[in-house]
Length: 327
Image (tube, rainbow, N blue to C red; front, side, top):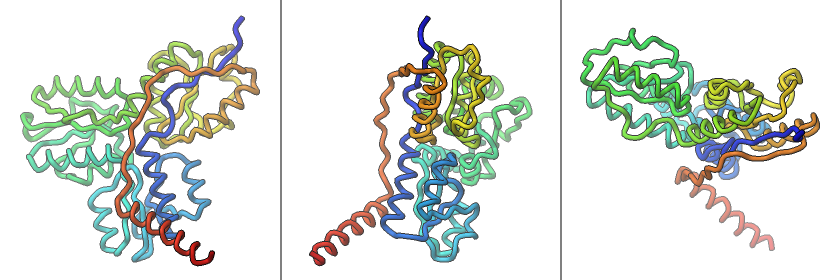
């Protein structure tokens, strides 16, 4: 009989938008020093947030908690124009860590609102990303939660309707929703390119591959991480038992009973260190072999805000000059 084993999904974990957002916070701290404020969680993972908090980053829920004239970073999920205006009114120095793929959805919303379209925004109404997008054109956008009844939707002009989506939804569920929308509104327009981001698509595809091999799938990620929750749903939809875990303490030994192959992946905001810890823990529970499945290599990189790049370069340059004088 073969050894019990862990099969790792590839790709998994951090996407380019998350890497960029975390880099922005760290570089801002390096360039400007404390205090640095961040509105909401920079990414939806409690370990990432706690690590940054330990470095001195101050997380707040709302802009009015940031002292006038201070430096604040907007999270990767984006904000509404109302939040930007509130920051300006408080003379805050803003660094925007919004994922460029979320910014794309914001721009689409603005464009279609100006053209007089009703925008159906498919997404979770309580998610920061959806709240931010809705704020771009609240009079034109109707949020459609994935579980809501499409038949209850009413629009002023069925010939001028477009759908947009949250970037971290289940691809399969969204496809089904869009198909129903097309039946209800035959002339509905779609975004110029897919709103669900590349990382979400790749990670869900890797989970489907895992589901063909594993008797159990563990998804490393926080409960408020939409893309992590969708990975659990995708695995279950493929007929495999799946659980979301923040860390090894969440793993229940009863889950492992009679399971020979455990699939393991991580949401786009979960650090690889957590995955490694889970692998080590499972090794100790009698799963000595580890292999990887999937083969999509992600080479996406997003540029940093130019003002932050300049500030970081100036800081490094000043440091070199100062060191030279000391010598």
